[in-house]
Image 1 (cartoon, rainbow, N blue to C red):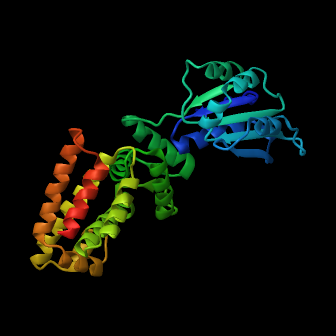
Image 2 (image 1 turned 60 degrees about the horizontal axis):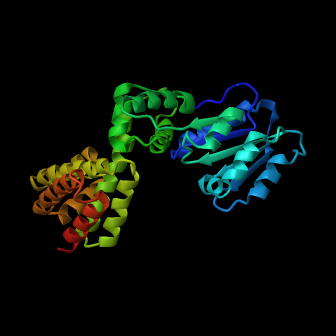
Image 3 (image 1 turned 60 degrees about the vertical axis):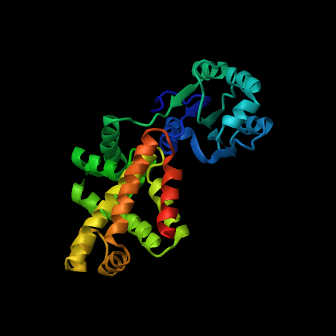
Amino acid sequence: MSVSPKACPCVCAIVGSERLLALDALQGVKDAMGEAYDPSSVVEVDGTRAKLADVLDEVRTMSLMGGRRLVIVDAADAFITANRAAMERYCQDPAVDGTLVLLCKSMPKNTRLYKVIAASGQVFFCESPKGRGVTTWLVSRAKTHHGKRIGGEAAQSLRDHIGDSPSALDAELAKLAMYVGRRGDIGVEDIEALTGRHREETVFAVSDAMSAGDVRGALTHWDQVMATDRAAPARAVAGLAWGVRRLRDAKVDFDGGTSPMVLARKLYSDPATVTRTLQRCSLDQLEGLQADLVEAEVAVKTGLSTVSSTVEKMIIRRTLS
């Protein structure tokens, strides 16, 4: 996704739905402009509203400060669809004193526009890493963007908590970098202390709202669980199930006389919250919730339902029962 250090092309397409990677590619375009890059000569346009004449006028306008004009059409899919023939003509003979960047989610390689841009400019496909590539990306990202080292085990732990969305992982890396301060390494214990605590707090919030009969609150907190990895919602169910299982084990210990302070340390919470939640929840309720989550996972995997609808129905039923 890096931009060639040669002269910056006059037209670029940055393709992909992962915002973080698209912005990285855009920064590469700016870097390739070198001394010609001038922030005051950058124009950003909303592709859902942009008019072709306005966009082309902007890219053809000379910069008053002598820098290279950079016009960025964000969410450019609709703009391309509405002006495809005209864009094909422009990209064949683009303005030489400016750079037009199209940020779009899709640009099939068999289209004429792709072929024209690839011939006269550059096309960058921002594909999210997959499988082991996510861990490799995490290690590299921590070093290059956050100045920290993270080993394979810690990177996998972070994936277990957050999922594989680059944007979500990078946001968590930023928090972890601040958390460890001057230390150069991010370890598993740091992830458990910071990221693990957040997931525990969210699971607590869902369970607490359900115990209090607060349907709206429980659904709001569930949506926060889903937001951690919308690209893999089944993982969100697994995360909630993991938290409920830990809550169920804590309930057994609590009823057996274990100190709330001891349990609070295990659950990354505070004694008052642990006490309130465990007093409201019965063991039967937590075990029933575990069973429901197993059923939800099965229903999703077999295609009988979606994660969202299954868990939302479960929350409503359990909260109102």
